[in-house]
Image (cartoon, helix red, strand yellow):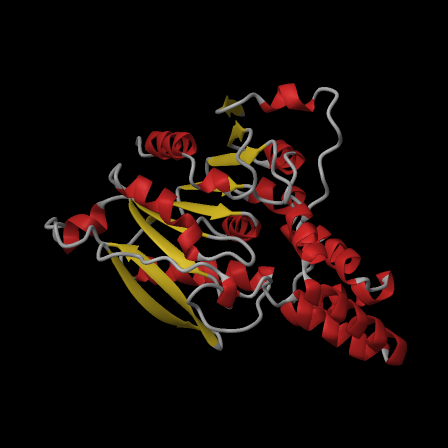
Length: 328
């Protein structure tokens, strides 16, 4: 049975008579529209379409798979002595993994740390592990052992391009490596497009005892349409770009839709989403709730797409959900 939990303002009161929710990628659209380099890229793609359809497809694909804004412009954050940073080789790049060890005052010993409930946190597209740090440390204060990862081409992981299937593979790889070390994950917690990757990964294998999806899109393939709108490419080029990516990855984008992956998720899931999320509208959470077999909804308002990750009330609700799953 699906339970509904709300924190902050009641989102339903905003939806009565309100304007329709914005399309997926609204934040990204506004960022690109304000960016001076977009007009240049639009011109380059338009020129490529006029010269050669194959050239336009390759250029569009490369740009679509490049996380923007570039991570070199992202604000950096120190992790502190309580975090152990590791780099694990993965495919042709690596993933950077941050393990909470409790700092110099942690005298529990490695065995005790291993026996505590571990949770793996993953960011979204063009994000980085530091975005999950506040939530991770809040969970650590409640007795959990958080592990945070940077996806390929994000944060401190190397690489220049990535994609949603690679997000899912990287998540599965980190889970497998942890299992090899004797760590059975209590939960996977993922934000935005990382949530789509996590739902897909857990639909294929029981990687953890529970799942938390924060501001996840229900139809990630819509981002190809947002991309085409922003950069002014034709529908023919957009569709060809999507087919090229699907052929190279061996997966269709629709396989990451909530309607496809969510019914196969067999673990209790918390769906956290804000009514004022302009990147992924609240309707995405409602569609996840329609398809997940065991789901609770944490609905917020006034936090948007990113601030939901830092809100203490949201941290408390996520902690309470995870605590309930600890019961035998």
